[in-house]
Image (cartoon, rainbow, N blue to C red; front, side, top):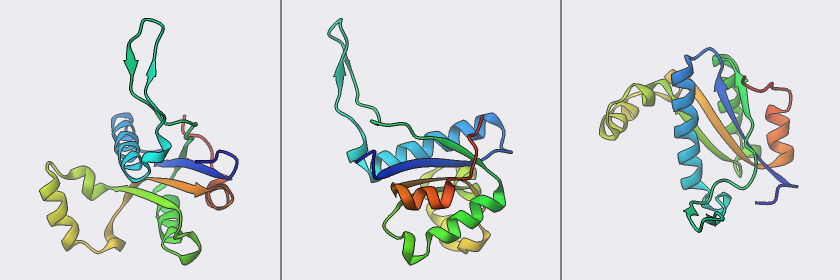
Length: 140
């Protein structure tokens, strides 16, 4: 990834309890690493000779959003102008499931319009990511 021309951000519902925010960020990050393994740096060795697995090579701002803002973002991200961006979403349906099999079954029965998104990751062309999220504040 070229930091000059690309950017990744997370947008998470700021009204969620802290534990759900942390869980949402963790799941989004894991899935982003699966989708874009090129973003993870090489393993590093400390002075003691101990190896530490590579982490993402650049900052990923975590931005605050409301349910409606995240919904609007998700809808815009389906548009052809944004199709080359990597997008990961995490919904209330996914968060409520105990197993992946349950998630698969429930997702097959629910229209997308009924999902409430807890968070998104958007990664790709900096100009497009900024166009979508540039006015959003950091989640603190």
